[in-house]
Image (cartoon, rainbow, N blue to C red; front, side):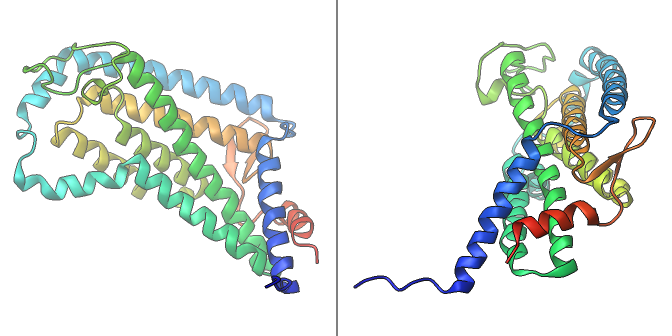
Length: 281
């Protein structure tokens, strides 16, 4: 039986959806256009270098003076009473966080073509912000996986004793994937990204990241220095993605001194132009 022609409304909707996806991809990969992107890049580089220096000193201090003592104080791995900690720590698992952000992003993309007027503009603005959150976590996690493979640090008590300098570089195994902490990368990347978009959420997101980091220590999944290294990778990764977005005028503005700030409310002018292009009847 020949298929029935699609209804005009369906054709119109899917056409708008495809146009929205295409324009979103083009915006992300287009050449940077912001006139103050160089100032922002230099400012971000200074901040990143300062973070690396401070975190480097802290990491080395922890490795030599704290790591072994700290893991020796923790309850044995697999302690039944820590079931609630094992549940809590999953809120920092990269797969779960990325899936949650991805589902939200897809939901916004599916809803936006059916909206009109200001509701459509708001949805597009939310979609841009969700893209930033997703890419901040994804990039940070990807960098962290490479560092884990290169460093090859053994997890607490791998090898039978507390040893902060148990390394098998390029091992590529779970037992030797302690540095940096993947959960800490995810939690701190998400915390920084959410705080960059919604500054009022800074304190709750910092508490969230610190709780996730603490669960990794209690569960003997990582040494303290692994967690600090994970926080460093997550923050710098989210900073890099924020600069990428700001340089393309997506969700962020750049002040004259190079400071990057979240656009207050919806970026009306740009989003209205995108909306007219993506959803032209």
